[in-house]
Length: 234
Image (cartoon, rainbow, N blue to C red):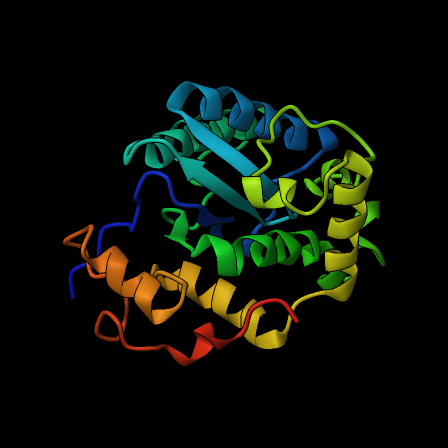
């Protein structure tokens, strides 16, 4: 069966997952984390991609990003991936691939899943047992959104701005969302839709997307509900 092209459309938020080959570590030092963040910042600007959230784990990373063109996200990921592998291999005295094939991504319905995807990313280190609270993990965007640091890589989405009329109100409201967490069904939907490349949203959203691209956007017929799409934040 032929591999489907990635589902990438400008103006929509995309959830991206890039994994290390055979689940091997993709970071060997703090400098490696900084290198990847630097490359993301440089190339997001270069290719017109707004990065809303991220988390860098030991053997994979997640991004939530909105490209301004159909080519922006693939171009950014290709540039970042190639340059990071060269940096990593040179530093480790190794050669060969680092990534588990091409990155996985799909687009999500903004109103229903954007904040849920941010929370999902922030809670990755907690679920992995690396920290007890998301605020304690240094390699995610969480600290920016609760006011602990300013991260120039990030472009907050308008839905985040709508959480409150002041920075303190927004930071407190977002912190509460992360403390509340997301349901197992939402977590599974965010993971599986991205790994398989199917759009994540309500039936009307999926049906409308299908009108905008020749690429099939849903495992079911466009407009039919998919059971994983029924839940959002708790």
